[in-house]
Length: 400
Ligand SMILES: Nc1ncnc2c1ncn2[C@@H]1O[C@H](COP(=O)(O)OP(=O)(O)OP(=O)(O)O)[C@@H](O)[C@H]1O
Ligand SMILES: [Mg+2]
Image (tube, rainbow, N blue to C red; front, side, top):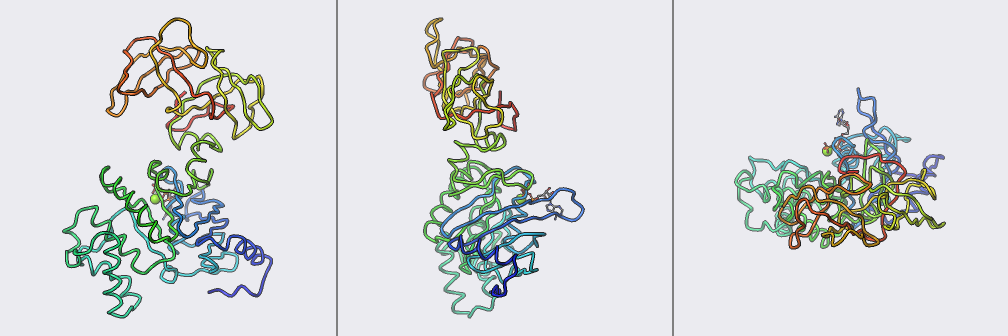
């Protein structure tokens, strides 16, 4: 452990931060990393906590800095600036050139590639980290047995690595990561080589495993379903910068900016006008083309959203219901359109709908009550819980 008793201004500040969040198993503060030869930083001013028993996910598009962050936590990259603490232990503090090497950090890691050694049996693979840390032979045997039981691989001890399925190999990789009883488990896209069914199963297994072990897990993925379903908290990154962090529901329902709004889930952007607003930020918005269709939402990024002004209202697909039009009189709370194309995709039907006063949207419908292609439809919008935006700036995944 590092001696922080002789305090400089710098360390006093970091000690104060440390005391404030003493319960966090992992604390990252103001991390920066730029690779040699790159103009842009891979990670910029990243701060994050992971508590024991929590799964915190770094989510974001390819190249946004997720693996770089994980590697700094593991000690495989040296941060250019910033601080990393494991509980009260300082493992990296750039301003004082403190850097604890990976083998002294007690982290378990599982990567995208199975990374189990093909020339070793299952038991030899799992025993490897214990052997390199010179654990007594008896304890090794005992720990390997327990780790394999934990991941449901008891009985496979003598099986050579290559004679396992992908899912089994990944379970062995988990056992190997857990066998040293690490303080923190780092997972970098551990399911991305598995097929869709197995991914779902492994997701549930990791959740159950985590409930039993109660260790801190820092998880990396670019798959939003994985992030939403597994995480206690998500830090959504873009171009090295955390855009928003919080529980999955917060990011989904109260996105801090357009990038978060469009990356997490799908968004339909209706055009409208703010009729009234209250100081709490709640606004009544009438939709263009359907003045009787007034919905409520708030702005989580107030730039340019004012009473009387034109706005975009972002509505989640599950908050729009498609119904056959029963007359020319559109009921209040609904907007009229025409179902131009219908696509049966199994669990639902997707309609390309031309909407009065708006653009075309893809609307999801229930497969048991299909709407005929080419027919007039009404879109019934959930009355509240939406978000309002001044611009129609779109990132991937959204549609106007
Ligand atoms: N060893 C390296 N040398 C130079 N540049 C690197 C190196 N590793 C990563 N980078 C660059 O740093 C940025 C962040 O990379 P990183 O691997 O952290 O992204 P990522 O979010 O994990 O992406 P992916 O989802 O594709 O794995 C990228 O622009 C990448 O090209
Ligand atoms: Mg990566």
